[in-house]
Image (cartoon, rainbow, N blue to C red; front, side):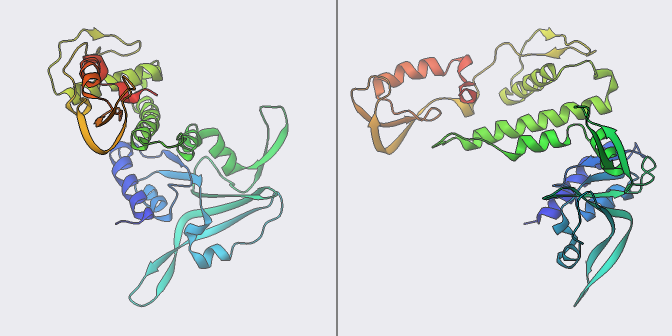
Length: 307
């Protein structure tokens, strides 16, 4: 099993190499989950600049313990050392053009950032005055101000994945997790599409999500569907939306025999050991016939996404 740092590094190498190798001199803004020393070195090697929040524990035990205790509004800059494993010992090697900044922004909060040398930020530690949205004058380091003005949806996606709510006694948490992370993927894909294809800037995220869902339906059914094209504002090519198609085999309803008997949901008069494969309801044979005829309709395969 790869470690968390190795999996993060593999994600960056597979995701950013084909997209940004042909577009050098760009700046990548990342959250602290993706910020590792190996990732920053890789981003720098392909000609990109890196700015993002950072976890001090990833500097190593010895280096993280040597960080000074800061006072309020104090800013300190540190060079970055990388631990290289040798045969018997470990060696600390200086990483060029990469620095770590710590800022005591509140009494009980220290902001840590890692960044490479940037053409747009000449003095990262210098305090810069600005006026907040509420009209209050404040001060921030120049590199922090540069990050806050350009990160856009980085913290928004982080807030989506931070808390995933489930009701009590939830038996379908895998389905909820799938839908939840699909929403995060759609937000990232929508922002990346606008960055790489400026001609699609007028498309709304609702139209983008509908087009992706239509394509997923075509791939799941594996059936040549005759459909009418549907035009989207700002899109040159019409998107095909399926009208009718066969029922997906994975979502068909059938009876499953269980050892536990429970009251029938339909008639509520007798107990049954047969459970519907999708709904999880106990049904007697008579109620099952009416249930299977209604749910195995072409409109019934999306029922698992309803609350």
